[in-house]
Structures are given as C-alpha cells and as structure tokens.
Length: 106
Picture 1 (cartoon, rainbow, N blue to C red):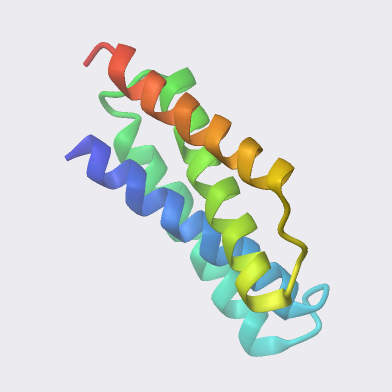
Picture 2: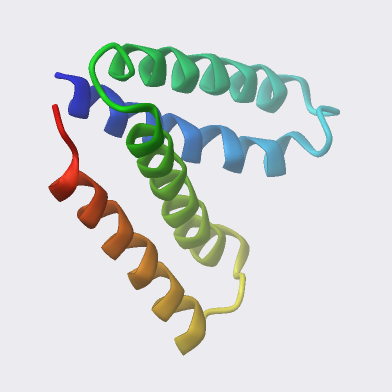
C-alpha cells in the first residue's frame, strides 16, 4: 500500500502545483482553496507512505512524479514550450524514479 500512497501523493502534488498557477498568487478564492486541499492531501499521503518507505527514496519519487506531471500539464494546459531537451530531462527523471524503486529496501 505504501507505494500506492506515494503515487497518490505525487498526483496530488501535481494538482496543487498546477493549482498555484490558477490561484494567481492566492488571489482566486476557489483555486486557492483547492490548492491548499491538494497540498494537505499530498502531504497526508506522503506521510502514510513514509511509515514503511525510506525517506530519501519516497521524497525523491514524490518530487519526481510532481515534476514530470507538472511539466507535462504545463505543456498541455499553458502551452509551455516542448523541445528535445525537456523530453530528455523527463526521461532522466523517470529513469531515476524507476531506479530508486528497483533498489529500495522495503
């Protein structure tokens, strides 16, 4: 279950990161509230995963999921640029996440 919690925490991290953009510096009420809820949910699920996962592995994977998801949604939702170097960097992050999962001690 701890890996499931970690993935859920990462998804919520993507949600609150995108929510920050929509909240426009916490000046939009609904977006701000949803962003704060996403933050709380992300930290909650991360804390559940940390009951049995190593902190270094879990934190790196959590931020990696958040980074990849936020970059991809930035490209889709906000028309941020996409180029080969961004794709290469995403592949490196995915490789790191997979590598950390493979070498983790549970």
